[in-house]
Amino acid sequence: WLPKEETKAPTKPKYQEYSFQATFNRNTEAFDDASGMDYFSRNNKPSDKAGRQMSNYFALSEFEKNREDAKKIQEKLRKKRNIDWRAYKEKQKKKRYMRNNEWLFKDD
Image (cartoon, rainbow, N blue to C red):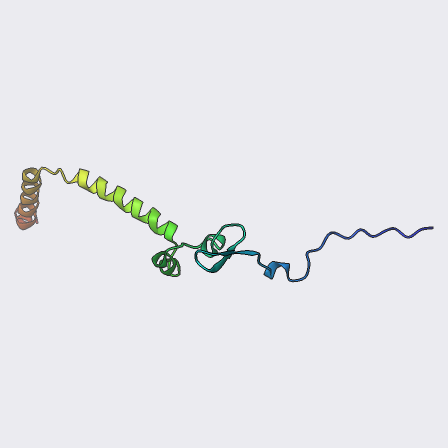
């Protein structure tokens, strides 16, 4: 009887998730990621300062979606603004007349 050979799954070397490969950039005199991605794109963060500050308080994608929805609503309201003001004013006058003279029309 021979013992069964244990096959272990290949394991990552210890602390590989903390390792980092980089190349030296002579122009900036700094180390860059070997894959060519900068820190912010690797971590899915905006690369501009204002974007990073705003993303700390709310989701930028939601904000952009909200702005688009607001523009659509404003367009709908602009289209509704074509109101016949004379007819509206006349309607309001009739309402006021009925409200003010309601006692005349009641049979008590």
